[in-house]
Image 1 (cartoon, rainbow, N blue to C red):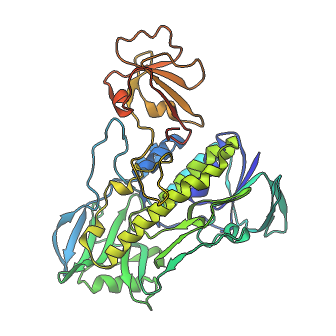
Image 2 (cartoon, rainbow, N blue to C red):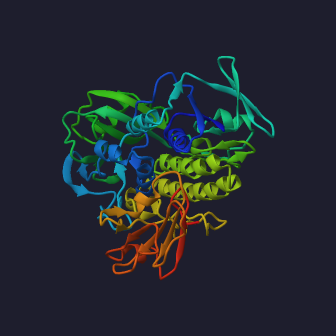
Image 3 (cartoon, rainbow, N blue to C red):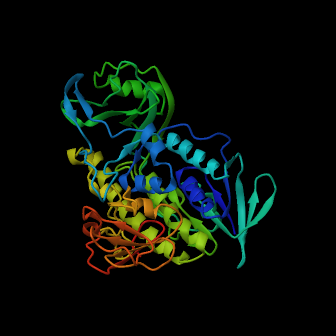
Length: 458
């Protein structure tokens, strides 16, 4: 089977890694001549960290990034205290990555490209898809160079202006607010303490100001501030915003910047026969809540195993479009509160972490309910070595757990035993020495659990 992925961002890279490790012949193209070099989506949510664990890159992400920083609040140029947007949580047996992680998007993309290269594939830069046709057997892709190729499936992960989405004539309804504009830029500010983030505002309007978040490993800060309709994304605009709050901060350079407008859209379909949409090609989000990149990665993780097995393909749209609709509503509501100056808009709770995604009981309205993600737990292998359930799940397979009884004698099926249980009839087993696995799954003797390849309960 051959799959073409258009777009070499986090969504396309995640899908490519997942497909290649399943033995699928993948071609990944991106029309840009150079790789993106900016922070953009700099928040990796806890559930996404679990995906990166499965893909084999979480250690590199942990080494390169950091926990979300505390923010030092400056009002009228005077430091008045520190606060956190996200309360830090301790790891739990069922949640090894309990906090969001800060890492610039281009840095994450570099880590994913390295992993893809280890698996024997790469992103082809400067290669543009200009058209496509499909029949019942394959998709014909037309490239800007004049060449054509046939693929079994094509996935558009090519951003909000997706060529793929337009080629299959899928509507992209939503709203764009031309009056609310935010400058986002990666800037150098040598006089600022890089150990914390900084919030600069006026005492009279403390919830409206300039946020500067340190970007680990770069020596830069990501700057965010609301600007006027005629302002651009220049260093001068960002410096003027800081000066307006008597910040006393001197910016010495800008690595990347953009003007962002609220653009909230959801594709009417995520699939047209052999063509799929994922990431920003299917849904575009406000930056509030840090959901856009994470939702795209989750799209890819949901689609990869289904494409590779050529099974349950209709469920991709059913499952992921409902999640995207719910996340868009949450992010848009948060943006409106932020624009109105509400203090709670600056706080982040677990509703943004990705743990509440469910594919079994998703309401038609798109409301997120209690999630059905398969939780982690510490256990021991037959030699007594400490391992995690996530170690059993990791890889391109489904996993069966049977609690307190022998599991079927098939690959990736395990009995989960309590201390003292007789393992004699169990070809594969782990021991739940502290009871965390039984508790995480609310399991009793002879309960069977099937974990899908994407880490959700079947």
